[in-house]
Length: 192
Image (cartoon, rainbow, N blue to C red; front, side, top):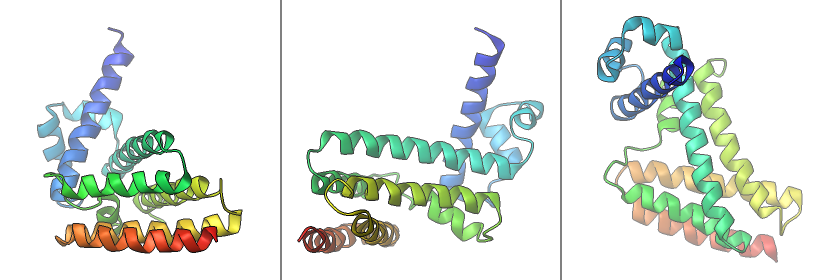
């Protein structure tokens, strides 16, 4: 196996290990030495791939965002109408809330720990959240004008984010039921 393929696998292993630790313990509470130990890599390997912890955090968030958006895109492709596509996004969130390893939104946690708008972690969170809102807007733009689609996407995005926070507080089923009801009403009005 070529050296750059091995290096790429090592890098990905570090990212996935850091993801698991950040998700479980938080960003500030997880030190580089802990990641090195859990990933079973040498310090030189870690610092060759990630010279600083902030860069590693951004890579973890960007990796998670790509994975999340790919999942949603695949699900939405299978649905026929914009309303059903939005429904699949809500369904995905409900399954996530109900899963045994649900610990809240990694991006919301990152924002809580890195609230400075000029920090690179803040920018990574912003990219993911903007990406979700834009995906919802693109789905709705098939049947709505751009302004109406953007407005509805912003509202749907807020419903999802609020339901995610409520799910972290142990109220996922009730929050998602309320979000679905509000979304259905809003989409009916937007399409009228």
